[in-house]
Length: 132
Image (cartoon, rainbow, N blue to C red):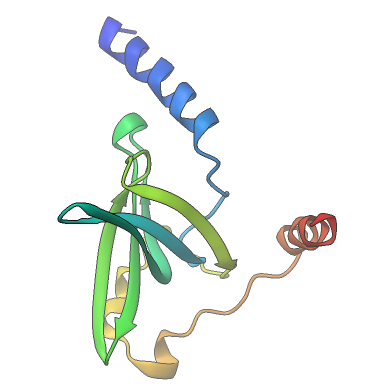
């Protein structure tokens, strides 16, 4: 392992422990709260949609979220460890058989639906909601 890889690995560990990101996969519906700077003001803007791709590349890891806004498909790529990403909330778990859901780009309405995943993932989610 080169020195650069070692430094990157330590940075990923530090950032991963600081940022409490939920475990999510392609097919899951997520709400990403992004810090938006407008002049001197900074505010939080939510972007909710289906995660259609994850890219695991150390510090350069990212994920793509797609939503339909006013009948138009909007995709946004978020770096996983970006300081602009305030938080990521898991809204719903989806059951898919692919790692990249680019085929959703060509589908509209009910054809673009994703079935909800049931099983072990829901049990942990239910346990978390009773603790709050």
